[in-house]
Image (cartoon, rainbow, N blue to C red; front, side, top):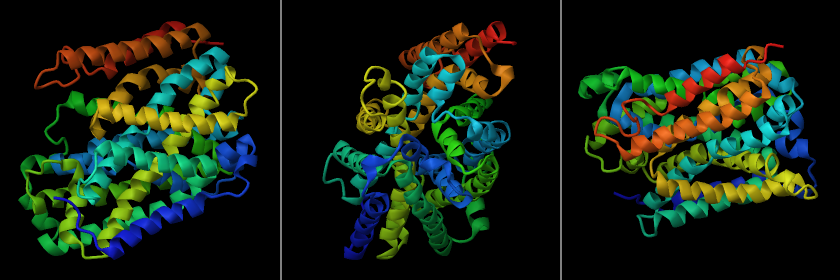
Length: 463
């Protein structure tokens, strides 16, 4: 199945891209100072803060659809609750401290606490962790579906990634903010519309509930508790995610950062309701045998929505994905250019290095989707490999109890990442039907995390 579009649908999609360019364009974009380019001068108001955080943290919309179509209501437990929990802890423990810190990025904050070498070293895993790969993958699949598969997937993925590079490079963080305000409105409006048409076609929530398989009503989705627990650990991503740090640092006050995160959690829980039940309606309406579950939402739109509204819903999907793609492109480029490459090019403008690195980040993302052509796999792999090594050193910047001696910061960043990566590699080589990446039945996140805790116990800086 592919999309059947009419002129009005194409006009809506084309208008969306034109609007993105218009919102991001700045006549004097080469003249921004560093704080303005990276953090919009630390003057982000509460509505803008909520809009950009809500839209950025929910870019994996096709991956969410893939999960809810296959496993039902457990989407809330695995892809929702852990992130609500750690987002709330981030608001309480870190948001205010990050806003008051003078650092413009996580590697800079690490460097200020532990030394320049530690800061540059942390930039490497952060650069990869915030790779835009999952979002490039989703956009490539979406455009291939829209155009009826008339071109190679990588062509569409590359084209959309380069478009994002263009408008993020011009507008900086300000462009991300302005476009996110539009995109959060489209997110909610589009899925409310899709769910309305699904209910009209199939019946109410009660009809849906009795029609889906038992495991779709099971909060675990039939998964082992070890698998569920690893997603709670992966949700620790929140503590080391540069998008959270960037937005907290850019808020107009510590109170704005804290309050904005709690308001965002309410929006995320509401949007999870819309996406989870939309995916389950997809199972009920389209049947249990979709060859590409990741496209359940686009295929529902093709089946249910009339001319015009169909194009509007595809704009919703584009907006949801691109709100995260542009943010992660910007953060990944900032981390590589400003926090890593600047040492090797001391006489080059840092904003210029960031702009060049945004393009490099896009190219890396395209390479990653060739290796892991699954959104869920990309999240799992990136989180499992890079979070264990980053978690305690980053927390130690702001919370005294997690502070490490400089030697152990280096050991944690290198050793824990290496252990998780090796464990993942062994799990991939010796994978079984039951365990895809878990060597000896142990998920690769755990060995890296245990080593990180060990380094913390023996290397705590108690001064």
